[in-house]
Each structure stands twice: as structure tokens, then as C-alpha cells.
Amino acid sequence: MLASGSRARLTLLRNAGLDPEVVVSGVDEDGVDGTPGRVALTLATRKAEAVAARVREVPDSPLVLGCDSVLDLDGRALGKPADAGEAHARWASMRGRTGTLCTGHCLVDTVSGRRATGVGETGVRFGTPSEDEVAAYVGTGEPLDVAGAFTLDGLGGWFVEEVDGDWSNVVGLSLPLLRGLLADLGVAVTDLWAPPGVATHPTSGEPPRP
Image (cartoon, rainbow, N blue to C red):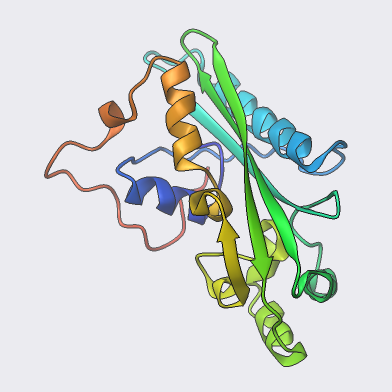
């Protein structure tokens, strides 16, 4: 079960052979202090625990994965910009520089109550889009829905020069890190793959909402 309404995370998991049910946590993402990595992990844990609490009484309750991403730029945790003006200002400060995309992961086994956590960190070197390109990008609305005001797998990918580390972590969750968290809870990721000949749901369209 994925405790996130992120289309990018759902698409990533589906393309990797999983087909999780989506339950959006509704957790408030504001007011969390600490280092960027700590902020990301705290929010991921809150999301996973909020959804896990709803399904613990259901027989054969699933694993619940919560994730949250922030961009570490000069030690500041940058999540989703509040509006177009803030998104434009973000890009003015990010152009030609390198930040670290931090994604917190919390995996909860709702049967045993055990959980495994981790933070993925990936370096991102931004290009130098022109003012017109930034204005056009902000005008699409995409930067308002994503941590750090950019994507790697969407329109924002045009303005990312280099990724140092795990690319999937920048998209929304780290597949290698998640495989390790599953192993910590005694689960092999290969056991979760859809059987041969059984396709996961299409990756187009919006994820289901509660």
C-alpha cells in the first residue's frame, strides 16, 4: 500500500513490477523542523503511520510505504513551492547550482508492527534555463506539485544537467533503498512482482484518491 498521492511514485512502482493500492495520508507537510534529511524522514514516517493505523484491523493487512521528498539547497529543506512566485524565485536560486534531493522512506508491517526506515540522497546539478524558459515552466503548473519545484521525469528534466546517484530517488522513491527496507522486514521484492503474464494497471492517468 502506498501512502502517497504522487503519480510519479505510483508510476515508478508499477513500472518496477508492483501494483500498490493508493491511500493518501492527508498528513500536514508544514511545520517540521530539522535537517532536510530529517524533515523528509519525519514526514514519510507520519504518512506511513497514519495510513497503517487505518488498516491494522483489516485481515491480511498489507505493508504500507510512506515517502516524502525535499530538496537540500544550502542546508534548507525545500518542499513544494506555495505559489508561482515562489517557484520562480526557487529557480532563480537553483540555476547553475547543485542541490541534494532527499527522500525519506518508511515501510510499516501492519501485522507485526515493525517498521524500517531510510533516507535516500541524490545530487542534482541544475542547468541554466533562461528567464523565458523558467516562466514557461512555472506556467505549466508542474513545479507547484513537486518538491524543489522540479521533476526529473517530466518537463523539469529539460533543465537538469546531471544526477549523481540513484535517479529513482529523485523521481520520488529509491528502488534500491526500498528493496533493502523490504529485506529488513523479511520480504523479498521478487515475491511482490506481478506473476508472469499479469500486467499491472496502466501508468497513465491520475492515481486513485480516497
